[in-house]
Length: 171
Image (cartoon, rainbow, N blue to C red; front, side, top):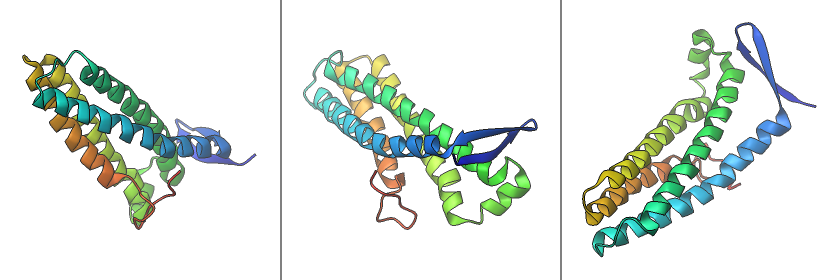
């Protein structure tokens, strides 16, 4: 069985079967479509709540919550992948990290993709939190709509689509 090794912490080497890493990577790649669908639907419902002055207690709020749950699952999967990806390339030493950052693919996945997705997830969380605390239903829908829309734009710009220079397969 092949393993991805070289994640060394306190002198201990953590190994992971390559099949597990590949499965998590494939799941992370496929789960993005669920995220995009839920996020789009949450944005549409928030927009409708904002524009039609509908109560925020209904579908818009539930979809916001489901969006938060979905992006948090995706975040955990991504952090798992990030830990083993960066660790296998650098063993978490600054000297190796500096050398690895000269590789465009490593830099994109270790820095650009990760930081952009973290920002998008934070914005989505802010939108949901602000909507829950809003005084009026119209204000709640507007807040969730705007913050989640900005998060969606960042996500769409940062996903490694197949047509991008460092893109990955659709699944």
